[in-house]
Image 1 (cartoon, rainbow, N blue to C red):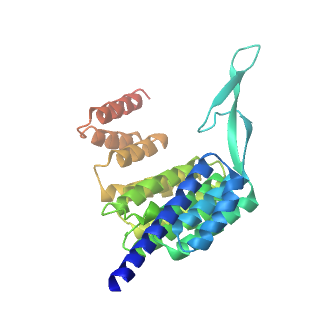
Image 2 (cartoon, rainbow, N blue to C red):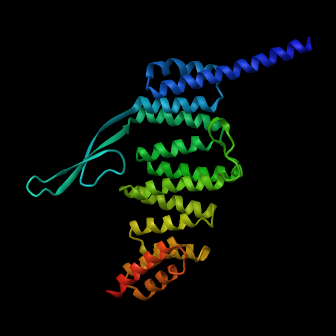
Image 3 (spheres, helix red, strand yellow):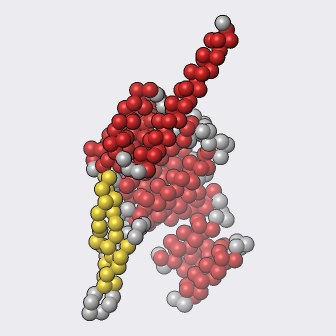
Length: 302
C-alpha cells in the first residue's frame, strides 16, 4: 500500500513538471511567433493550473507588452541610438541634414497591465532579479524616468534584505557573484538616464546615484555617473566633488582620474588638469598612457 502511495505521488509530481514544461514551451512558441490569439487561450489556463508560478507572471508581462507594441518611423537631426537608420541630405549641398529611423512604442493601458503582472509575481518571488529588471527596462523605454529611478532604488533595498541571494529565470540561484552582476547591469540603466534628453531623467539619475552610494559607498561607478549627471544639470562644482569622492576610494582608477582631469581642463585650470593626466601615465595600460599624452599635448598647445 505504501509503495502504491509513493508511486502515485511520484507520478503526480512528474505530471506537474510535464504540465509546467508544456505551458512554458507553448508560451515560448507563441510569444516568438507573436500569436496573440493562442496566448489569450494559453495564459488563463496556465494561471489556473499554477497561480503562484513566477514564469506565468513573466509570460503575462510579455504578452501585454506584445499586445500594446507598435512600430513607426522617426525623423530627427541626430541618428537614433539603436536600430536601422537612413540618412538624408540637402540635395543642393549633399550634406546630411537628418536621419530616418525606426521607433517602438507601447500604449499606456497594456503597459500598465504588464507592469501589474510583474508586481504580482514579485509579491510571490521578491528575489527574482529578472522581474525587477524587466520593470526597470520597460519604464525606461516609455520614458517614465521617475518611476524607473524608484524601481532601481527598490532593487537596492531588496538586495540588502535578501543579502543578494538573487534568483533568475526558473528560480535559478545567481550564485556568489550576484551582487556584482546586479550592479554591472544597473550601469546600463544609468546610461539610459544620462542619454535621455528629458530633464526629469537627470533628476532621476541623481536620485539613483545618491541611493546607490548610500547602499554601496565603495561603488566607483555610482560616483562617476553622479558627476556626469551633475555636469548635465550645470552643477559643475557638485560634479567635481563626486569625482574627488571617487578618487578617495580608488586613487588609481583611470576613469576617475580622466574625469577629474577633463573637469579641470574645461574650467581653465591647466595646472590641475595636467596633474591628473600625469597620474594616468602611471597606469601600465599603453592605451591609457596614450590617451593621457594626447590630453597633455593638447593642454601644452593652449
